Image (cartoon, rainbow, N blue to C red; front, side, top):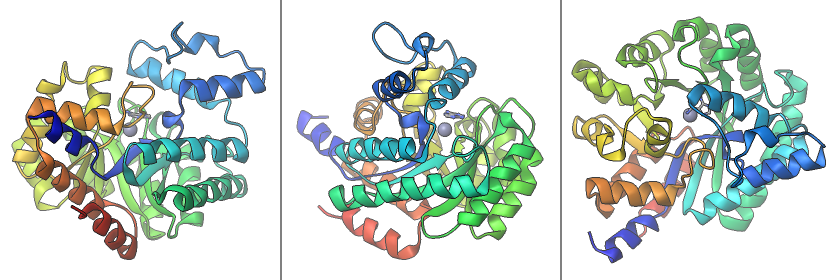
Length: 334
Ligand code: ADE
Ligand code: ZN
């Protein structure tokens, strides 16, 4: 692959489906808020300023500590602006982000609406400045349990529309079962929301099957461990259930030892719809440009493959068809 081909790939317009809103906060942004609010967060940073954690479970703790200084709708609006400025710089033209009512008003519908208004205002400003389109996916957190998830689902249902377009679940896959959250996913579906859940990042293929069968999701967050079950890969392909694959996150957290051992290529070759996202970019020292460059080098993927990945992503995006058509036009530019 020539440097020119790599340059083309890295600078393509991109669709990103899997980011956690707070997980996109740069460490300097969180340190700044901590200082303003006189909160001591020194233990979650390394001397070089990056986030400090040992493994995925410690990451979840550090994530929640970092998020604790985001206290008001204005804080979330500032974060939204920072995220979308950076995303536009990465060539992202359409972004979906997981936003948790647990962190935005503690699951109270009235408070959630105030946070959401502030975030949407910031997103509208970024759209005017950069043309970037954002949609929100309300997300419950698995290790907070099914009752907290119901609060998140009620917030989602109350604000479902052309901006909040989906409902999902993140958090610790080792806690409970997908079906424990069926009430929340049914509530969101009845409100017209599209559905996604983290599955098959830490658990095996049966977790992905549970997500499909017990929750009826449209997409899967990660889903990469489906690679060891050919029948499951065929099911995902037949039902057009798209995987939100985050290769850099998986390698950084040790799900796979290195990118050349990552199953994204195998899944794609089997016909599973796959897309590429960053998950929590500053936590995993990644960006969309870095992901594209690493995938191009490792799997010798050229421009056509990345154009196909972005087409898969916009086809699986949780936006309305008018938005989908407008973004598709941008992606198709030579
Ligand atoms: N929350 C933020 N990042 C996550 C991940 N990679 N998996 C599960 N929950 C998360
Ligand atoms: Zn995630």
